[in-house]
Length: 542
Image (cartoon, rainbow, N blue to C red; front, side, top):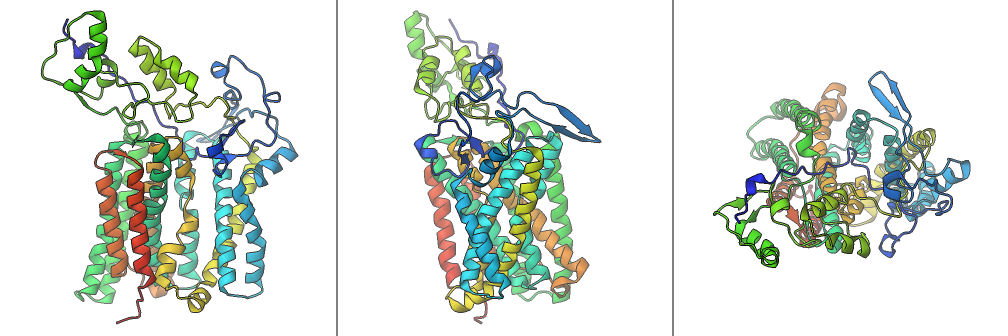
């Protein structure tokens, strides 16, 4: 009998988690590949016996019931919710979960040593190196505390907290370079370096490390194309003033006025994009990518074995199965590389076998949707808050203060570093300074097959740098007179070319809305090429 594709109901893509900070996870039993993942926190005080038992919650998943019971408190428009932890908070477990939760905290020993050298007025390469390394665990602690804070907040407060804390390290370093050292050239180079490092380093590592166990990963085409367009606009806003300056077609005073006008336009574009992403088109941006289109020939090939087994004939017109109907009428092989509802790589073999043995594909697809990477529940994951709300606030406050002083010491030691070594200021600003600003949580998310979150986080940080941080620097210099009021969007030619080629490469990778580990190699290779060139760039050469 003929197959009527129109009778198959549409399926809705599963939504993404509201917050982008979902990388910090605690497992009762950690796999070997998670031993060196700093975002796989050590379960010091958890055992199967001391977890609160609730066999009815979430299908009996151990510890997964934690955080399902809330006590809401509303203050004006802010909603605070206090989820139930897996274990009661104590002084000892709060200390363990703060200081000994990840191996990356070993680098915290660099904080007192680096700040001590700087307080003794020893500006040297050692001072730079120690404070540079200290920034990494301090930002890790800030991110950990922020994720814990967001567990107690409503969606609106969590989104706003995400926006204003995404590029914390870069914002602090930009303000210090602008107001304290007056190094406008280094400031501009570090801003471009922040965009390059997020796209080439962070996204490259995420695609490489996350693509090895997941074979092929997909992401939201709409969000990716919108992000690529915004980055192209940002590159154009820098390219035009730079070209005008290098060609000598305007005066310095007019160049400053032009940059200020462009900065206002970029801020408007960023606000409009944020409003679109969070309000008017939230479902399109915050939902998982739909299944890929399949031709009717592929559909017949996939359904022919079932038709033969039942003895029924299959006839179909020359049509194409749309993404909405493909998962129902044309079932791809379970757990195949093209399966849009493929279970996470850490799913147990027994669960996969049970799903594969089901004869009803509709029930199978719903099982996959429930165990999708956006709704996955690891049997050994301990959910709920790990820190009490006051403790998370305190950790964030202390970490951000120490982070400020470490960045200040790092910037003060740049001149000593360039004088004692062969490193150029361009290399320091373009390659070295942006690295501590990188939040390596997207790598952990990509390994867990949360590529949509990885793309939003890495590319979103670049968009924020280009459309928010850069124009704000120009306007702040105008309002405060910092940098002699002459801060513009005319960057160096090398920085602009590097930025343009990076955005071009990113646009090519986003065309198909699917990637694998080789794409990560391409991004990292581009970053290495730019780094080699930056090592030999000297702006003082005429």
